Image 1 (tube, protein in one colour):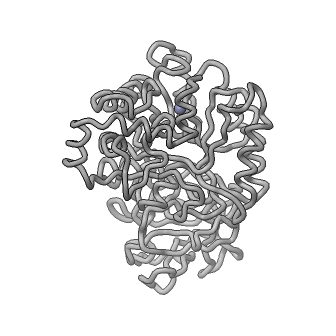
Image 2: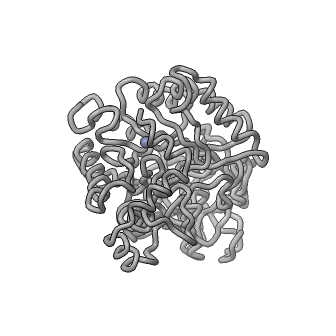
Length: 431
Ligand SMILES: [Zn+2]
């Protein structure tokens, strides 16, 4: 491990002092040319005010490595939890040269985790030239493209090694290094800081208690501690040992696990892909096609619960809610084509159509089932979201299928609301 950079990460003033000495004409020019460039960031903040206080996000830096990243991925699989991995190309292993490491990165993606960018070589960005910063970001994208054999994994989430120069930056008086580097990164990705540093690199080898205690002490209980993005490194034994216990703690204490993309959406109302590329569709993973006439469970990205018809399931007016997915007929919907891109969602339990009560065009109007009538208040459009999920809007109101609250609880009503692409309005259609 590099000691000085870790000190830099821990003692921000040390880094700022170094930055002051690095002021260059080129940096000044960048500052003049791009003083107000929009750089979307999830900054380093305890208790971020744009997400609920029981949200945590699992992130792992510096993968892949030969010893412990696979153990972390095993633990996540065993606990059915998803994380974001900020990958390096040439750090603890060589992603360009080692097929086993390339296979590990494919496995991370295939098991539903997000792959993100942590540079090729893990440098201090404040200590390298603009062209080298550009290379560290785009070179990692090229490596990941070569790992997957295509460009399906766009690395629109980025974390600078050591948080340099983002950590401790004051937006009202930005560091020179920040002013120089952030616009370069922002062309390619949203920078992701953290709220809770697990300090795993500082724990003794194999001391899982140390990592566990650092994280759980910070978290406490919802409303009574920190929350948000947790920084860990998948390359340490102590981290691999702590991860299952941390997940158990998170769940036992009423926290919910979000993805980094969920946080980006909560902050900016759109995915990192859309922020960078300006579109409203496409993105990190290929959207699985849906097939007219086929039957799906409709799973909330926000809660991981299923769209569900309340009892009694057979009557007109039975309301829609979310509930733990159990595979029952009242959680299955047939995608019945109406016209190009427009469908009815027909309950397998009742043969009735998803329907806006009223029919209303107002926010908060309840969704229910009703005998299929051909009305536009029973017709939906499906729009691809960046992560393979769908946004479902009602044709009569142009409003979106949304979880009231949003609540993560069983029984939370599903209603229509102005579309905002937050995770309470994104759904996975699963067979
Ligand atoms: Zn790192």
